[in-house]
Length: 503
Ligand code: IMP
Image 1 (cartoon, helix red, strand yellow):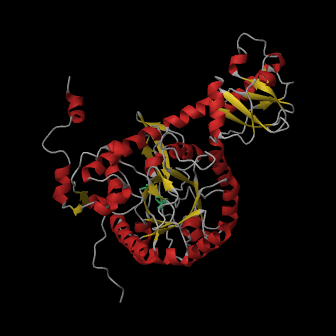
Image 2: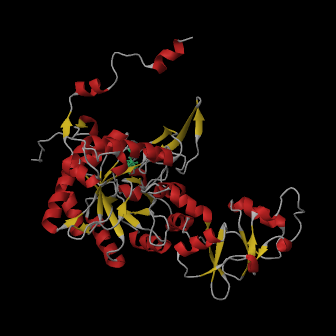
Image 3: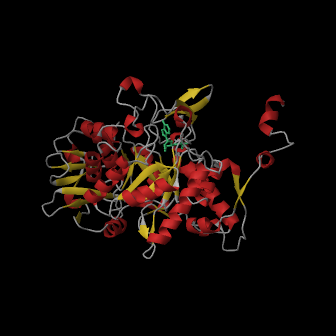
């Protein structure tokens, strides 16, 4: 007979955190949300970490380059979706890595024979106001000077003239030679009161540019996640079919974190893919696996697959209909708690800590904090990010409100059949996700700021200063239905309901 588990499957809605002693040191300014994303030896301490415990779902409607850039600047990581060609996924990764390297490759270059009109056209195309004038008009040829928007007036100057008489020639520029550190480059900009510092090689060919505004940008994003070359961090998803070829292209493009993305990751295919990827790319690459919902699946993946982190969650996603279609899955709270327990046991036995990520169904900041308190090291969200300005979809207006489209990877629209692996026969493939709309919520940065403030404030109530301490000290209680009702407003009339009738 089948094994019937004694416990009921629980969701985050059914729990509340109890406040602990809040000491004077428990103020939001002292709370750190830094959390590991890579496995580590307990004796050695964490390796790669997120500064904010949020990652975005590997979905077409969520994780494109623009969102990845916005999220990395807030301290999290986006997983660029794999339901696209290897070339276009690698190109998206490249876009993020090239975004702000401190040393930026110049994408606006012209030869000295170009006209002011050419410069204007290029400026409109790239949106960048600094144009490098190079011998052959290309990136890696001899630098002759810089033309900026201050050098000519669009409505006063004759635009058919050559750029010759307008750009600042190389002799009057401050330059630095390739190999200079970002710190020294920034000092040069500061001391010489310049906006842009071209970096050239020994032959005088243009290699990159350093901008003063990037320095300012960096200062205003204290949680920004960057690699050793000051490039933003980015992740990408893999399937268990073309993983080797895909991973090679992604690594080549500069990806920092890879994750095998299957709706059910408790499989021999996933363990094999993880093993082979590890063998090919070594221990430095961060490699995640999932999704799973039970302790035995965790054990299996970490022992047979050598993954760095594991994603937890089946059937809880906001656009997900897997539970209806197939009857598999588990309440997200039960899954996270059971796997967190197993993660801790495994760490005790082996000395290796494997972070876990709670993926799907997080609809509010309270659910995020519960997921973290129950043992998740970080959380993955789809809908939360799909609603933001930076998700890769266009806003639509409906009855005076703005919305963004949001569809599941298992929907007909995404056609990510590798994630679901159902049937060889095309006509027998069925959907596990829906195609929907979500309200538009504005810029990602503002949204993450609000969530972070709430997380930190709750952690102060609990009396902890970090995610690890939250795991250890959180006290969580099950709630009755009436407790949930009691938690809402009661016996008051809400202003927005009264207002339509008020004169
Ligand atoms: P959300 O944050 O509740 O919107 O859930 C996002 C998560 O749902 C993703 O990270 C995936 O794990 C999962 N997911 C994405 N597409 C589908 C689908 O079509 N069916 C089921 N689950 C999905």
